[in-house]
Image (tube, rainbow, N blue to C red; front, side):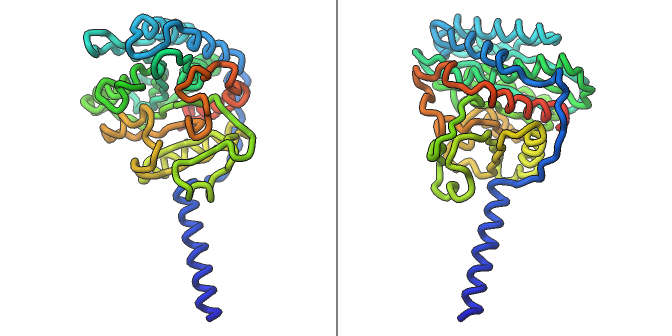
Length: 324
């Protein structure tokens, strides 16, 4: 009987350990100092979020003028960072919509893409966390690249996508789908695409973090004080590498999950478009509605965000942008 009990315990430990490694993809923390010139500025992040969130009307699909104003702002900030941004323009319903792309590094080298969408879901939605936070992060990355002048061996494309939200979500009308389709058609060498989806909301209270599956509570914190990395089941090595680089930048907890698309929430952003074209992609996120009660609400305002921790996320993304 004792041998049976010991065998059962061993089996449970093996299952737990295997599941732990599969879901959370633990990696060793390695220090990688960030140059002073390449530290994210919390005040700059806040300023970008405030500008985008102040849009009247909102940056929704049907408010083309507001979306164009946001695109103009992103383009101007990219220019200030020393690159010559390009516009990828496409038509939906007789209106022009624009992705804004800022590129660094050797043009013909394999490319790393880091981007977030600048549109919002519906009217009366400032969209501070979703997704002005990500756009602010991408703009700050461009400034940091200009300041630090790293010697990039890959092409780095920083992108502000349009039309991620409904009614275009998970359709060919998404700005990210338009880009992914063109890259696939051109047989572009894409090392990785990182979808930056809501990176500004953090909560330290017990029970402030929820999950799509009850099982996940065994493996992840119940406090929303971390940043998450999401990838497909077979992309563990990609997720592990992104995680290691983000961890190297500081003390913000970084957790990861690899799983199939049937896991609720795992494909809810622009990385979905790249998955549809069999291009490698992951998402970096504060987990959206699994943490932030202001998701798609009028209360998604700039003052609800934690810009100090948001800056730590961007510091992590800088490490990925330069060293991946």
